Length: 95
Image (cartoon, rainbow, N blue to C red; front, top):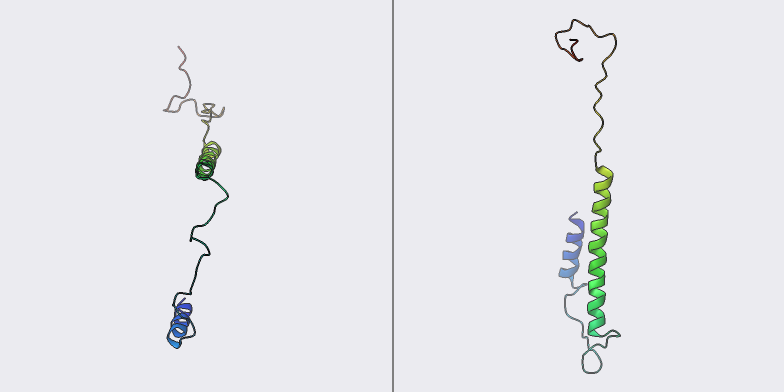
């Protein structure tokens, strides 16, 4: 884990690797030309945001649908060999 930090420190101290800025210049007036207008870029940004949000919402919806528990019917059937003189009455009492 510390090997990379130690190697980088040794290289910086030895002068093999420097942190000086390299000369960089953009020809012309320093502005970059874009192939899209500002309105098109805004539309692209909104479309990407809507796509990401839509994907997140659809994944959340699918997970919710897949993990949704359906209520299972309650089974009230009693075994036939149950003791009829049990202290707990499980069937309708005879009148």
